[in-house]
Length: 173
Image (cartoon, rainbow, N blue to C red; front, side, top):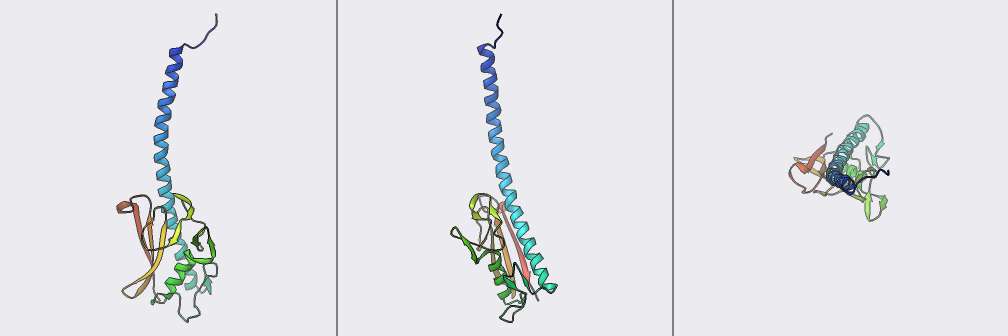
């Protein structure tokens, strides 16, 4: 006597596998979205930490920072922390906009290793004021006569409310 599965038993197994696959695919999509948002948050945190660490090197007496792209006492005779904004502008350029690192239609800076998890060809950190999904936008401005770097990040769409992070690094002598 040959033992085999009946057609009903096979159909039940196929139905169970189909249900498990459907549940798994929708759950996996949610995990991917959360992982991308967390990667953007990590880019934001690391870019600020890197900037503050490099600026601290100037305070401790280094002559240049950010792979030599920012001179702590620059050729204009302005200290990198000078409130007129020149220092903040130079730091912003070094972070995200160095001609030597241009490629693929994008300007890259010393943070060129940061990738946008929503678009693998786009940088994770860019020059700009505003919000772009998956990017940390860095710009330099001044408020009440004090220069600052703006770190503006959109973790996921829509770029508003809890989906944005905004932090500042102030330049003071």
